[in-house]
Image 1 (cartoon, rainbow, N blue to C red):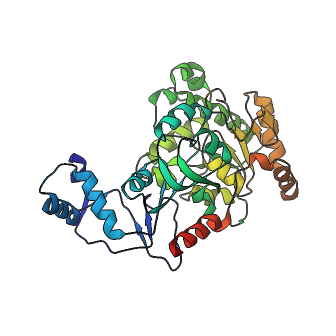
Image 2 (image 1 turned 180 degrees about the horizontal axis):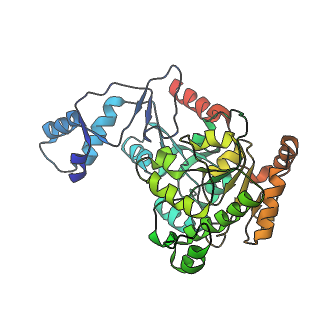
Image 3 (image 1 turned 90 degrees about the vertical axis):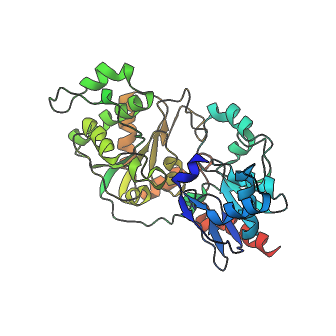
Length: 371
C-alpha cells in the first residue's frame, strides 16, 4: 500500500485491446493492425481501486482484486511479458484461458540453475521464447509451456545499420556504482597504483574490468588505438539508476584517453571495429547481429558463458594472460569482413539466434489473435 503513494495517479477506464504488454515495452514491440496496452509500473489507476472497494467493501486482497478487474476490462487476446518481473505468470494464473507469451529478459549463468528452478517452479505460460535451448533445459525446465528458440526479443527488434567506423575498440561498461577504493588519491598521471594496492578490497567485477582497461590503455598509447566506452548509464534499463558522472570518473582513472557519446550501445557499436565484452548481455546480442565481438571471460569460475564450452576460441578467451589477450585484440582488429564472416559460419553453434524483425513472435501473435 505504501508504494502506491509513490506512483503517478490516473483515473481512467480501460478499453478492450488485442495485446497486453506486461514489460513496460522494454523490447520496443509494436504490432501492425493490432491494438495494444503497455502496462506502466509507475502508475496506479484510482478508477479500479474505487471499483474494488465498491464491489467488495473491503481492503482485503486489494492488490489481487485490483489487477483482476484491471486486466478483465482490457480483455486482451494475448498477453506478453518477460521472466524477470513474473507478471506474465501472475496473469496466466488469474486468467488460465487467456493466451500468454513469456520471453527471456537476460543471460543466465550455470550458477543460476538451482535458484532459477525454484523461482520458476509451477509457473505456466502458453509459450516461452528463449535465447537458446540451453535455458529451456537448464533454467526454465520447471515451467509448463511450449518453448521456441528466438534469440533476444529486444535485440531482434534492432536492425543493424552499417556506419563508418570511427573507433577501433568499444568496451562494454559493466559499471554499477563508484567504490572510492577504485580511485587513486595520489595523482601522478596514469599508473596502476590503485589496482596493485587496492584490488584485494575491490569488488571482483571492478577488478576484472580494471584488468582489461589496463591492457586497453597500453594499446591506446603504444598502437594509437581509438577507444570508446558503451556507458551503462546510457542504457534504457539503467536509466536513472546509474550516475553517468561517477561512471566517467571511474573510466578516467584507468584509461588515459577514451571517448563516449550519448548514444545507445547498438548505435555506438555500429561505429566501432571491435567490441570487447566481459559479462554483459549486450555481447551475445551484438555477436548475433554479426558484429565483431571479443569475449574476455576472466571470471569463468562463476560466470562461464555457456555459448563457449572450450577455454579458448577465435573470439573468446577464459584466461588472464595479457599477451594472449593483446594478440587476440590485434588479430580481430585486422580481420576484414569476409574473414570475420567465415569465422562466424564455422562457429555458428556459439552464436545466439538473430530473428530479424522478430518474425517468430509476430507470426505467433498473429495466429493467436485470429483464434
